[in-house]
Length: 82
Image (cartoon, rainbow, N blue to C red; front, top):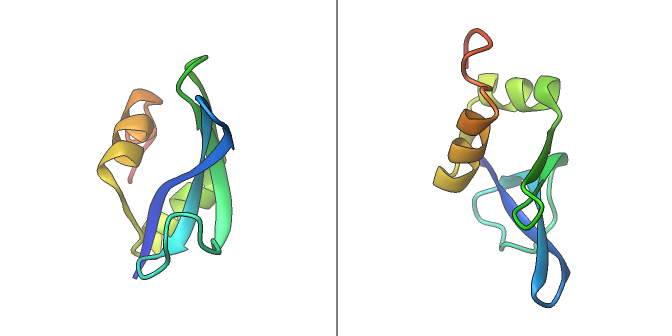
């Protein structure tokens, strides 16, 4: 099963997270299938590759709770079908 979840990047005390499509059995820093966006909680910036996210969700990928909240704040689910 594939999930959309956060992968930590950046340096100490200055975390930036990539939103990645990754196999459930992989660890947080494991090999991802595809990078589909990033989230910077310090500057409150988000970049989403909407076609890639929509593709993985249509194929059955489940976003984690945090990624779901990020997508909801970016109004991803209001743009039609999720």
